[in-house]
Every structure is written in C-alpha cells, then in structure tokens.
Length: 251
Image 1 (cartoon, one colour):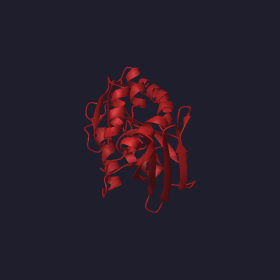
Image 2 (cartoon, helix red, strand yellow; image 1 turned 180 degrees about the vertical axis):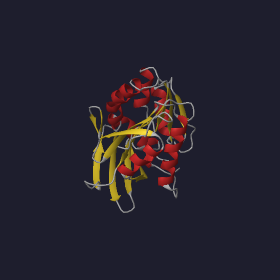
Image 3 (cartoon, one colour; image 1 turned 120 degrees about the vertical axis):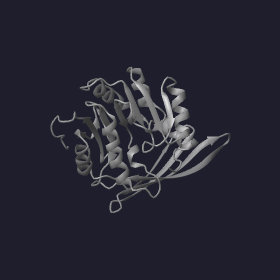
Image 4 (cartoon, helix red, strand yellow; image 1 turned 90 degrees about the vertical axis):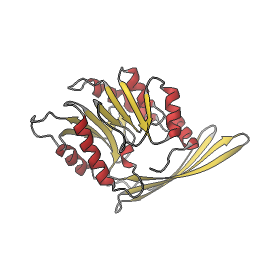
C-alpha cells in the first residue's frame, strides 16, 4: 500500500484532526465493556497517533494497534507506550486471538493500488467472523454513497502548520480523492509536501447484508454516542452471533 500520512501530514493530523476519535472513544469503550461476551484483547485498526488506543488501554483492554503510516505510529508509541504497535495494513495482519476489532476513521476505505476493494472488504469481514468468538464485536465507519456532495476545497492552519485539502468525488467510480498540501514551519520558513488519498465509497445496505451473511448482528448509526459523524459517514456496530443462534440481522 502506498505510503500515506508521512512526517508533516502525520504531525498536522495528530495536532488538529483527531477530535473525532477522542470524542468517539467513550462510546466505543462503553460498547466493548457491555458486550455479551468478555472483551479483553482489542485490535485498533488505523490507530493514527493513538487517541482511541490510549482510551482503550486506560479502560483496561489489552490493545494491539496497527497503521500503515510509520510516522503516525511513532507518535502513537510516544503517547501510549504500554500498547503494542504494528506497522501493517488491516488486509495483511492476523486477526486471530482478538475479542474485538475497531476501525475508526474509515481505514477500511484505503486499499492498495489496483486492488479489488470490494473483494478485500468482503474477505476482511469473513476473516473477522472466523476469528472473533460469539459476542465479539467489529466496530468501524465508512463513507456512504448519496447526498450531499462531498467535493470541496478547504484550508486550515495552526501556529506552525497549514493544510489545503481539495476533495473530488466520483460516485460512478465510488471514489473520493483528497489532494492534500501541507505546509509546516521549519526554521524561518515552511516546508511543503503533497499527498493524494484515494478513498472508497460504500453502499451501506450492501455492507449490512455482507456482515449478516458472515454471521453478524448489525446496527448502524451516524454518531458514536454524542459524537456526531461528518455527512455521509456511517458507524457500524457488528456483533458475532453464535453458530446455530438464529439468523443474523442486516441493518
């Protein structure tokens, strides 16, 4: 998978763009603690600089956190030294031995160039279903197809950074492309870097049926508790059903 969130963008992301993860953490912890089966080991997918990882560790969970960005992982290790961090994609890492998998911030929408995104996600659901015990949970969010349009051009800045994001949506291709230019102060000047992030858009109903066919009971929301999600972002709370425990429910 291409290298994303390199040094300067990782710094900006950790500084100014992790409020959603911090706001969602309480609801995720609450759901894991209220699971019908004990949850001890949690896989935190796309952990970023570790805001959710930190909350999970503080709640007493044994956390393994993964991300495809080595620079974000370096920041996360400094913030949460007691967690176990792995530089990997969710599509490559083993899921065996975990009681819950959490993928906050649309990490399932990032795929290797040329990969069949739908096949990767479908296989991921199957792998999680095979790995989790009955009552185990899969929590994640994605961007859905529909309205309002998401194409935009935005600018944000802080004391020692600025970022310009141009977002282009193509619903026919089910894709969102973010062209990101980052400016970070270095000495007396600013260093400029650029990244292109290609994000998959999903048919929410289709994901519900895929999860149900893998044996999950599924609930969706457009918030994590009091933490509202951006437009068209959908959170999934999927619970692994016991074999022979009745048909799983699509959302």
